[in-house]
Image 1 (tube, one colour):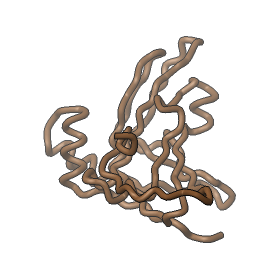
Image 2: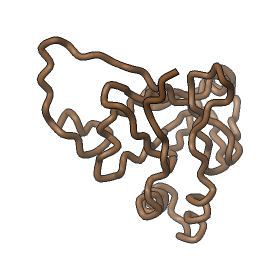
Image 3: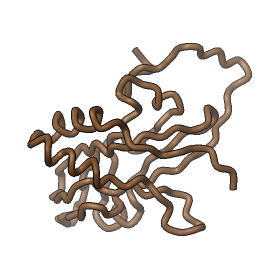
Image 4: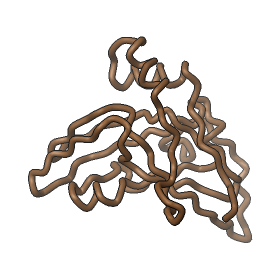
Length: 169
């Protein structure tokens, strides 16, 4: 299997700014979260998905949403994309969904001003009144690297700077 990417933590400064903006709280506790971040990993030799681990414990009642700054960025070959999905079991048991349905992390996102910081926004869409409690350090999403192609007449030359919606501005 060819190796095409690498996960890294964003800088401590980037993470602290994004974490405190999202959750508030004390810088010291946010720093502890940063120190405990785990890089995504595959669970088995045959796994396609790299598990993203929750940096905090959280509970989602049906209809509730949480935005999670993962502290993770991904460098990858230019002809690859990282697609992010909820963990299959969480989707099956709780109808846990990403708010953008599938997260698309382009190779040039790594170079954005926000260091390519991957955020994952989840909603418990349970129609069975199931409450999800996710432990800190447990897998909650998975990322899969896929190669893609270009059309023969492609001539995109613009450079990215930003995340959601930045390529259509």
